[in-house]
Image: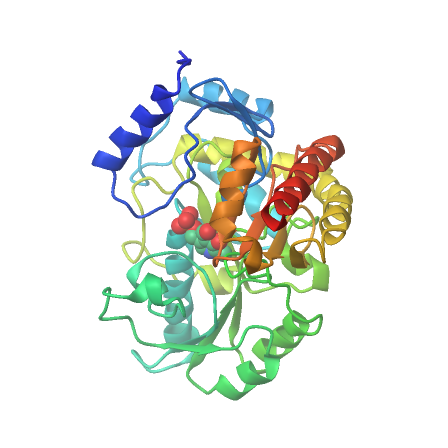
Length: 408
Ligand SMILES: Cc1ncc(COP(=O)(O)O)c(C=O)c1O
């Protein structure tokens, strides 16, 4: 039941703050329900969601098709662990492998788990197939990457906050500038088993690489017998106007890492997709997860794949993305320094004289538009792909007003 006085927001934040680890700094908005691109708070105020849970809600809040699948599966079976089979896992993996053009899928839960799994698979493939001596494998990553928060992943982060106090770190990674294929070429040696990249860097501020970057990485990896691993956890599943961001450059990686929207905004569901010669290196007991590929998640994942097969969200993102980017670019010189991105995914650099990204996000939230800053002075616009052109206009109009107020 939605409460109606201001204190319910304060009370919810107080209890969360007292008993929840302070590993995030959320805006003071307390969600109580959500439909489509809109979130309603505990006091009945409505907000246009322009973050979509960092792209986990690509198909809209309470997407009816996904929710219907979830209801149906809740009444059937939700969890058996991988000790037994389920009637949902095989069809889901077959469908997702088909969508990726790969043979096999390893189902996991969070995005970070998919990345960890991808790293393990690359090392095992290096040892078993490429013939790299045990313990000698190296993996090339990009500066300013974001692949999650586990120890091995932060081991190759360039973000001091993500690493500070968390050592010792996992060895075996080489970080080179994002977008620089020559630097990757120089870093590859006979013990390199993989190059791991976000095709478009998300948390770094929606950074789109030069057009020849991914095609050149593809050529280099093939030439040196190195796996190209694309972390499409944030960029994939229709966000940029294609099923995968790699599709913009006609590049097929050896390994896709997927998460976020794969769970339909309902359950954590992530996956590694690759051909049999790569994923086939895993044998019973070498990797796993109690919840990975559970029937509820698998059923939802199958519906997500069905939705993606139809292509409607890829088209919406491509078309409406042009509109979003044109509207945002018109603010350059009016408080906006630069706009980057593809599809319904935009990183907007703010003139820091107008205030921090956090302060502008707060001002937008007060007007009913939810965005979040990344790296201090960049705002990320990544609405659910169900958003309409009118709603985009409404959000950007408010953004323009907030910038004008901040500059006056
Ligand atoms: C590119 C990328 N990889 C991995 C992750 C980690 O996903 P999760 O938060 O589900 O562990 C994220 C999360 O933002 C991401 O953007």
